[in-house]
Image (tube, rainbow, N blue to C red):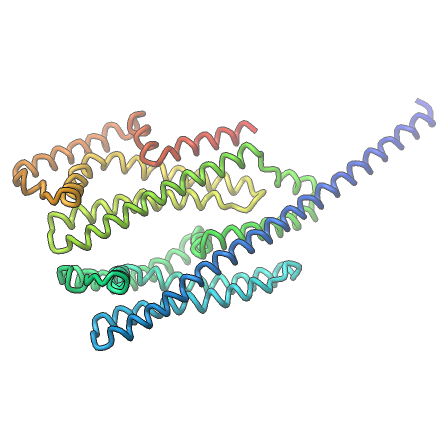
Length: 412
């Protein structure tokens, strides 16, 4: 090879290098523009949810004020309305302040200052959320009573057995310090606590922060190695579609569980003074919560920042394993729950007390047999394919969809 050929080869290499650099610059600009659009869209969507919350909070506050005025002198009703009023007022004030702050948010601000501003908004929302959650056990029954009284004239105050009100009051007062203490302990002693606290601000806020975090992470990664930063953003389309489908399936299952919780809560409120009904109702309530909570966590696990494929996959696999354990536990406990469900449905649909009709010995025999089947499933068949197939069905087939998502991830 002579000098002329070497110069031509070097010139072609230089041209190819310039072309690659130009293409890389265009790709980086395109990714940056996409992340900017998705970040702005996520915060705009969150502001929309804030407006919806404000649209509900304003008539709720006005309704509570009217309710208190109309029932002045009936101090039990006034007390219930007054207990609900601060929560509605806090939702209004926090929502208005957050909406105004986000409307004037400048994404070109320095990253540290921007994150500090959003952390302040999130901390304020978290305080309000913790207050609502800690008072939820105490105030759910007064909320239901006020709604029925104000909208339909129903009188749960005198319609329910007094024990229901006293038990709810005691449990609610006990739950407040326990919930606040447990939340504080979890935040300080578990590495995952900060993430759960972040999630507690709401799904739309979590997604908006994830989009912003992805945007800032891409800027830092692109400054170090542009090619690595671009590769991290390339979540395969087949995986993205599977994630969206799984999120929709999980949301449907969560709504079904929530509907069941509302129905069983109404049943428990009506049958508060009868142990043969309230005990099955409470156990069914706990079973529904045990299935709904891991479904929510699994859906939230898919909210990782775009491009952070490793963190997304690790979080998803962990949440999927947790969901599988709870689903298997639900299948194992199903034989014991079926007689309780029959007791509840018999009373709700037919007005029958099945345990009383069967008698103490027959009812005890049925429950003993159910407990034996549950014990056999727990000790001998926990790992059987039949149990896992039933667990998949109990989860709304989200377990199979999750496994398929992982296989697609491995195949790309």
